[in-house]
Length: 109
Image (cartoon, rainbow, N blue to C red; front, side, top):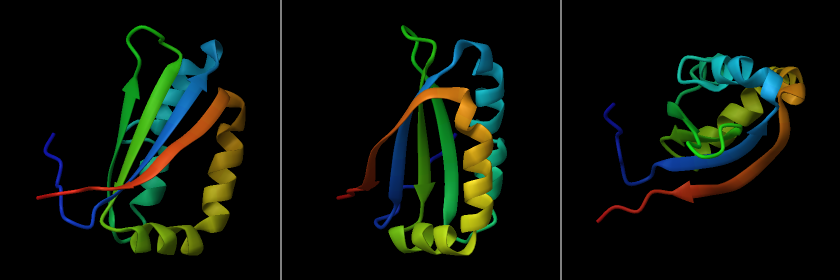
């Protein structure tokens, strides 16, 4: 996988503790080709989503969403808020916890 690091790239990182009986469903929805990235792809400026699973704690996951800019992400939220809320509600029972670790700007030299 080649990741494009342009000067204005915006990254959003979430951590999830997934319920043991929902691991496969969580991975299907949050993976690179899952429902979340498919929704994000409807908006200009979305680059990719990565799903990471902790090797020592198999119920712990991280998602990394990459956008060309924070403005593109905010425009996505505004335009697709109904669909975002519906998918978020659908995923509510999959996790024990969900934590926004931060919204980041990529620093390049």
